[in-house]
Image 1 (cartoon, rainbow, N blue to C red):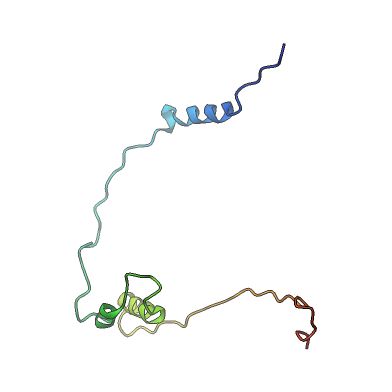
Image 2: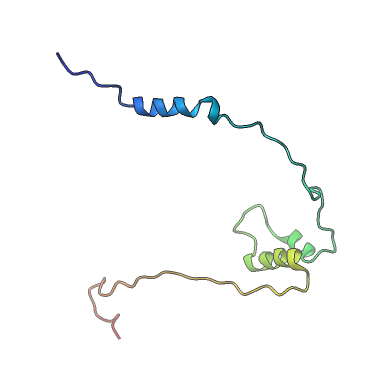
Length: 106
C-alpha cells in the first residue's frame, strides 16, 4: 500500500485558520479628524507661487528639481530660510583591464 502524505499546503492552511481566530480580530477603524485645515492652499503671494505655476508638474521628471526643492523648502521653513546644498553620491567600481589594455593604470 502506498504511503499517502498530507496535502502539500496543509501547513499554510493551518496558519491561515489560526490567523482568523477571535483573538486576532482587529478593532474597527476609528476616524480621527485632522488637526489642521486640509483645504488650506498657498496664496498667489507665497514664495515660488508664480514660478511653480509655470512648471510642468504633470510629469515628475519635467519639473526643475533644484528650483522645485527650493520652493518646497522655503514654503515649509520660511521664505528667508537658506536651503542646504544637495548631497549626491555614487558607488563606482572600476574594472581594470576590462578592455584588454593597460591605459587605465597610472
